[in-house]
Image (cartoon, rainbow, N blue to C red; front, top):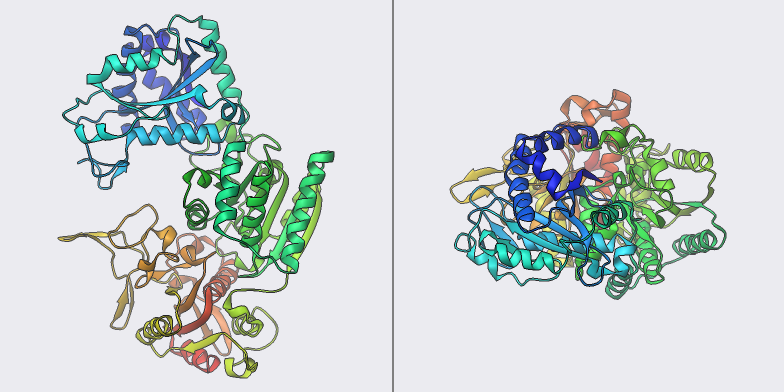
Length: 629
């Protein structure tokens, strides 16, 4: 998808007449479904005319131009794609162009650039376009077969060498090369080596047509890298029902290829039952065998952590990890397999403010999009982890959708669990504690009678005592420790201090106070991004919420029950008025009661070796003290 497409010469006429930016704004409203910001309009006005003028002056008037091209399965857009033919081979040739209006900038390393106008560093523009090229090739089998077909340049048309001297140290590649206004002759030389300025107009148009009609799926080179990265990094041993799930998916994939059948596989299991291990193991194996595979979730924290863990040594692998709403405009069976992890987070629709209106009109249910995009959609599901209004992933919903789309359905139930010390007793304790089963709550000492019980439960007298206990356990027995709490306190933006940005101590209980983890998209020195709160050692000392804890594990868990969920006369009572969760507050009282119960179930089941519990409510605290004995 591109917002505007014409020749260099035609676009330059529109730009000089003042019509190009208006056309882009109007097209954005139609295609993207929202009004672009004044800043984006200024950026178009300030960059496109200089680029088009320079291209026309250099004789590239007949080259086809795609403006604001959206990368496949991604919200990212390339400023300009130049389409034409290669001067030597006569085959199609594509140049991705990243435009910047900077006049001054400096870099401390090869990839990060600092500008006075921005609070945080940004990616070096040549590195930015290099990654766009690599992503496009990895996502487009036709381009992966001829990777030299694609090239990339970054053009700082307002900058001189003196203003961006440190940026010039970047080592150029075929996918990423930096040019300034002092380098116009070098830029034109580079473009002439890639695009024939005297080529027939029809060939440029055809190149643009082909580019927009490419089929998008993971390429074989990317799958080879992914298989090596995932399988070399981790050797997964699957047990019992885990191996059954693994074999079911493998057979479904073989049937799909041999007979063009479609099978939906649902893997049901509680916290720590190995759902994600199954997905990663299959992802590595299927990638090695050349199948088109993606891993998708509805959680920003979970997807980013999966990208970091599975693609640690090769960032290309990270592109296989997506979000549920990335498939709204996908064609049927673009993939062989999609692993929908944390499938309880599936929503009714993928439509949001960024969805272009032409797609919005055709959009259906998100679950249908996920089934449609692959021959074998695999849903990894825990129905007791729905914690936000609008989350609707369930076996019932998936079954109904699979039947409606004429797909075979196979279900595997994972009975065991490998978190919480593999303790069945703790599983039962949590279920009874929260009223998830008919049996009454029971004290831990009564339930955990096995002499080899490997999980520890502690009822803390205060948040200070809780923090001290999990810290001491991590020190003496080893492992990681984290504090989490119900979303019962406001969550402030970082504040500026004489020493830089700092977190605000929002979670206050008596004279004890701590900050929440860093907000998404915010950065604070010496604190991990929200995605990595559970895995980065710097996460200790901050309080995690459900959105940063869900999907993760650590050895020692401290869980603070807030006033949103309290005991009254031997029953749990949900109190929405005490919630600070903007999403959960939109739920009905009945919905909220189920959501908050699931929230505390998730928080209580993050620990591998032990948990400490505490409530800010006196009656609830007395109950937890009795149950934690």
